[in-house]
Image (tube, rainbow, N blue to C red):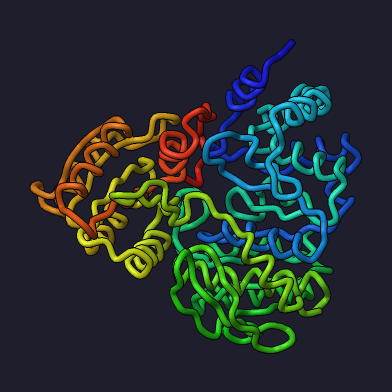
Length: 451
């Protein structure tokens, strides 16, 4: 009998996510063989540069508080690839995942046999098909689907979104999506389909123009933060923040959100607007909003994973995301001094990230991820860090356990008020969680591009 570990190994050996398989033909062929499961329930699809995962979690929490059964497909995973497919707020168990895979594998092999565009199905295409089938089998009332990369040709786009949610769009994956925010926006706007509705976070003017153009062409209404909905105010609170939001029924206040940062508050406003759009413009009751937000859990989003001294973990991996994370960490924790642990992928804007970190951190410990071949070696990261920080503020520990041990020691030596912030890669965040939060877990190897 094939074990879960063997199934995971077989899946992750497929064409990896950072090498985008051209077109939608393979995943379209799979879902056709499955009977088009993605047509069996409404879909809320989420694209953008940063904030997709946390916005998806908030939408899920609000819909569940409203009494709906919800499926959520997300990427990349932190520790185990089963995290990507969740039903009723819980990832599929290994047993359920393995049974689903066994059901779908013969159809995957049929698509593989045709080698459309010269390649078999990619890892992400198979995972997308598994998610859509899992949601149909459940069945769910609504599926929340996070785009893997881009939009137009992302495998998830074989579904037609009832609500297309656009998180903030900025520069990332420029080797694949375009070198300007406008070009990237055109790719991500591909999730906007006729018959749906689009809901967008606050965007740059050139990005918003692209989204408006796409909506006009598709005959779709566009709701925009600041014009159609908004975060009215927020205040820091123990364990999170308190929000006042402009909703379909007017302002609602005293909403406790148990995560940190202005960017998370903005994501909450976007999530509410997306859910209200899904409900046809009907407002969520204040008690549903309160219950939904109270149950939001966002692993590795300014998550405290150790105390005395505090170690905080975040998935931020590009300048736009890192700037938001650093501001959130400063507001929520005010570490004095801050010790940063950074590990990054080789294809990211390493200098741009380090220049932002340098403004907040007294020193940086450069490390590297172990569960992918795409990680930037710690020594190379340290070379750039030395140019940004000065060599006397830079430490190097290639192994993450050693890097965390050193950072905690530096914070201990600095005394009360010091803290550690780990950031730079989704994969680094997953490996840190596996060490400090889930020590019994075996991390699934990563080859994700959005890391």
